[in-house]
Length: 208
Image (cartoon, rainbow, N blue to C red; front, side, top):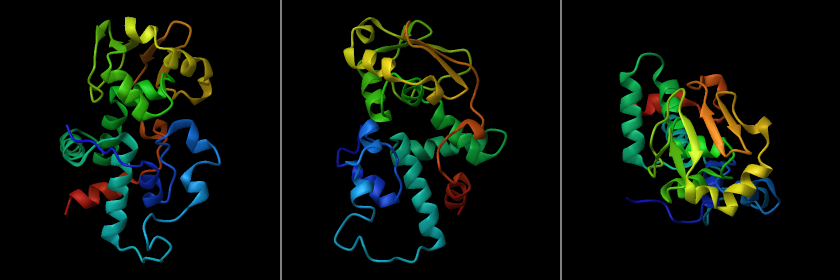
């Protein structure tokens, strides 16, 4: 499967917003947005008057880059969200939030979504007692996420759990750091999804 392997700090600079793609580094002075808060490239400091289409496109790109999803998969999520009852934009964000790699990140097992995606691919987690190595696997209410035998031996996961703050874990999830177990308490509502994405612009882009 194709994936982006370039410098991720350029993605934040292109959106002119911290997407926290590198975990703890994004909170320090080494963050590229702190040192170079302008578009990457030769003409990055020039002023560009954004159009309506540009604003819609940027929101879509921001969502894709935040959750680490490529275009085809993102479009599939949108099509699924459009078929569900309720507001399409909110349904889209809920589907993205329910990805296993995102849940693992929010539970404190990893410092970034990219790291959690790697942990899942390496088979470090189980869902309801069964090992899952597909980052895009969707979780549902009541699912229990736990460390597999290999995951319980990973020192990086242990250190992440020790430094994770309970205040940072969303209210729709819970984590027992000492046991290395987390649980999905409910499907997240829009108020519980802490991302600065204007989902209505994404719907407007795909509705054309």
